[in-house]
Image (cartoon, rainbow, N blue to C red; front, side):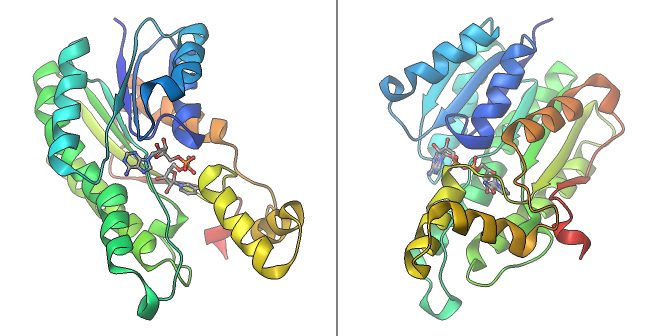
Length: 258
Ligand code: NAD
């Protein structure tokens, strides 16, 4: 039976790689993003080309809890349930705590943490009814360790690891699992913005800054690839991963081993 995967933030970076990997495994794919549908028509065609028998796009702001809940219901109704939920969408804001914009704090917490609470709350009863479910939260190494100037992101990512564990406990006796993936640096638009800001401040080229950024934290000195994370999602979604729940999978080139 064709499985249906719902990926928040599936229009870019890691989420797009997960969507493409799921499509090539023959899954029905629903993605969400902030962009207008016309702006992501190439993403939808690449999902179809990769092998998705069905794909749908939901343009919503995940900072809006009610809209987020309505989107999960709409995605489930349109296909007939949700087998795999990937809470992937995330944003960053970099500033010291005493200069951290309050609206930016609220937004980072809403998109990176509260949205996953809302999607999970709606998806769980549907998964229980179907007798199968996989919830995979894209956390970060910042769910395990901190970096200066990233208070909201670090708090949200530590929070989503807690949410992952609670979800796992509440579903432990059912055929539902919930796990988190904790990537180190992945060169996506989210990180590119940080590279460009740092390069500008230091008067260096973006390529030089990218090398410095990755080598500061990641002993491998190599970016994690979005496709590596997509492979981990598919592994955790498989029936053979039924005993893996409440866990964190760190993919960080040695960052948190130090
Ligand atoms: P990205 O910027 O490439 O993509 C972010 C996605 O989230 C896009 O699809 C965008 O439309 C969506 N999005 C952003 N704000 C939204 C909002 N308010 N409402 C709805 N959708 C919204 O980012 P990425 O690097 O692919 O990050 C994906 C996830 O991986 C995030 O949770 C991020 O924290 C996490 N992560 C990234 C890295 C990295 O180095 N890139 C490392 C660890 C964890």
